[in-house]
Length: 165
Image (cartoon, rainbow, N blue to C red; front, side):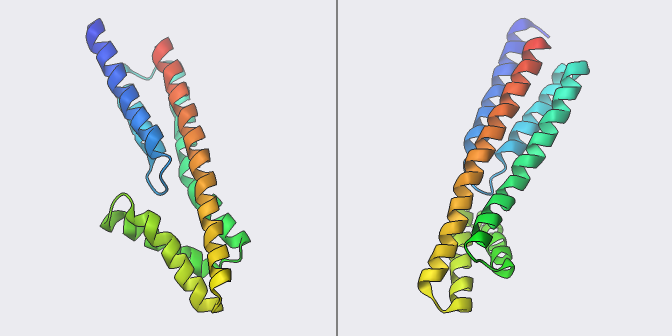
């Protein structure tokens, strides 16, 4: 591959990864998956090699962790605030449906509203439903920070791969 084409390809992959990094700040948007897919394309085009194969396995594990941490932190914080598992499940479902119906912000609006409404219907106490909803939102904030950090590590690992490859 000519040098100019290799540099252009690497810049393109980096730009896609930086887009994934920014998207990792939004709940439900799979920024780490975008980074992982960019690394997969890089490996298929540039070759994996021994170090690249190991780093790709590492990137895969990080992408899985980033996708799981979202639900774990949001659900844990809502649960700690007193949310029922039923309400959490409905909030996640509402978030997913909202993301598809009104992307990208529909899920951000639908999930907390669903959680609040279910908890208000269950407890008949607006203050309690709001405290539980604040727990979900706190979990979202923490998961966004965790996903961003994981995405940043993924990009740095790819940078090592691209630099040494």
